[in-house]
Image 1: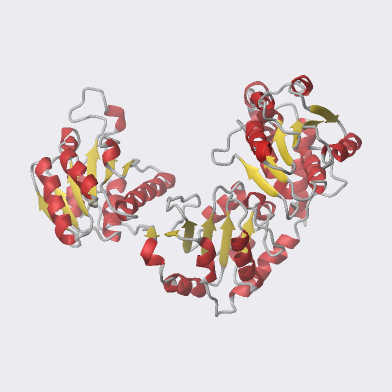
Image 2: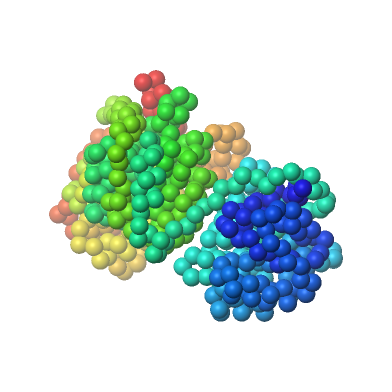
Length: 553
């Protein structure tokens, strides 16, 4: 019988799934749930060593013989500190030592409770990774716990080897050993280096999957990769989903999936959910596609990465593959014709979603559409976060436009400065599409001495954080106007002129058309700011109306 503590069960089951079967246990009560669970599964060979200093070096001896990871397990308090010399030795010998430490609940650290000290990160730079597991109370806790353990065990042997530390808070009662079996757990497999010389296993799994989707995140333009993906899409081997930030352009790729997934019925969602999802690149903006994959998880989710970093935004990652994606996709072969119907269904659904037309109300959305329609050839476009980066996805992007955004942390700071830095050394036109709060937050970006005449800033001023008016439930908050959306009546005109920019403004559709003609003219030598004023309530009504019409189609 095993402990009922779910974080303990996840730890033991994942060590088993990763093939780590030698465990050196030092005695104690806080780690009794771990000792019980390890010792009752015949997969594990357990050793009992009282002194943790000796136990750590005993495990190093086992590693030297086995040439694979070994785990050591101790109770809370100073017991863990006694592993220090062995951990340092393992670090400099590059040996895969897995430290599993039991701990008190974080609430009791520093409260004069016995055997308590700050255990997370106690080994500092002497371990390749250190994680603090949650005490599992929800499905999200379970996913978080599983991911952290997988990350640690991957790091133990990936691209070399070294010690890792898994710290497990265990609250009382400690001694309920009524669980009859270890849980089925998700093991994330990491594949890199020489193991990728033969991709036949992945190619076979690709071929065995009938419903394949490739989702591209934010990345710089990569013509070779785009061409390879276009070949796969052209053969109807898979669906390719990409936002403008992916900088991958093909008529065979689907970019309006944010709007599309909004109108899926549950039946359509099940039919259009993949059994194989492959992701690559950085952040994906669409929350709707994230929820789609979380609610309809594929059997396999492969994430392709050149760094080997473990990211699991859809909570279903099965394989972390460190590879060059262009080469990887060139090796994927399809012999079965069944998947073509899946691709046809996605393309048919995507073709039914249209961008807002010319009769759309004058609003944030229509301003973005008018602007994108007039972008000059070979422009570079920076977009601010929140509404700006989402609204561009409602319209087609000129194929030769490169798109950038500070999406790494999704903050409002630095938009002007980032676009200004790019424009300072770029020969062509650089545009920035930005909202008012983001613009005002980075006003200093207008004042640096490197501002170039090729920089054009389209500022949509809707009097505050417009996106907050669209979030369900926030309309009931008394703090919305003043403290969340930061409602204001400020114009940028004075600051713009003080910074030496030419200032243009528009308050209606006619103003906008006239201003855009000058704003997008490629032969002007002046840096410009076009400030477009929109109404928050009109924006909200236009947004709601657009998605309402989609659902009626």
